[in-house]
Amino acid sequence: ALAASDGAQEVELFRFWLNDEWIDVDLRTQTVVLPEPGPYSEEVTDLIREGLIAQRIGDTDTAIVAFRRALELEPNARDACNNLGFIHAQQGNAEESIKMFAQALEIDPNYPMARLNLAALQIEADDLEAARTTLDPLAQLHALDAQDAANYQCLLADIAIQEDRLDDAQDHLNRAQQADPDSEVVADMKRRLSRRAKLDKVFSGLRRFGRK
Image (cartoon, rainbow, N blue to C red):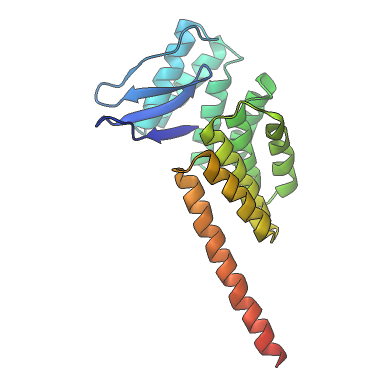
């Protein structure tokens, strides 16, 4: 739901997804330049902005109130659903988080971020088949940005690792790196795959030793 951006200038920026575009917040002033036109009313857009900034500074109570108020005014505010789901996931409330991601997908089945977030929770719960079903529609989308494309391939790699398909996992990570070469998510997943491959070699050696 949230992504940090280093930016080209020496300015600390906070990046979030709203109205089908990435928005950068200058944390020195916490101002936001919003895209125009957007699908939400000005009041709903302001509430989502308020929630995102509160979320960024750790004021989750304010963020939850703002996102819920946005949904009261605009039940189809998918961004509010997604970010509420993100907060609930951070708080360990998987049931409520899944509910909010599913609601975002009811509003827009082609919303990549909600699909990625929901699939990540399903993988965490070891429901790999559900995660695969959640991710399948993304294969048909041609408008994934670099970050979403990389995260999609990383989740497929995660599934492959858990299913002991390490070669497939490597293929997915190669595609992820091609999509977003600087992604920390990709780097972390590559380290995880490397550790898993080393463990497999150790256990393979132990099995051979046991047969002697």
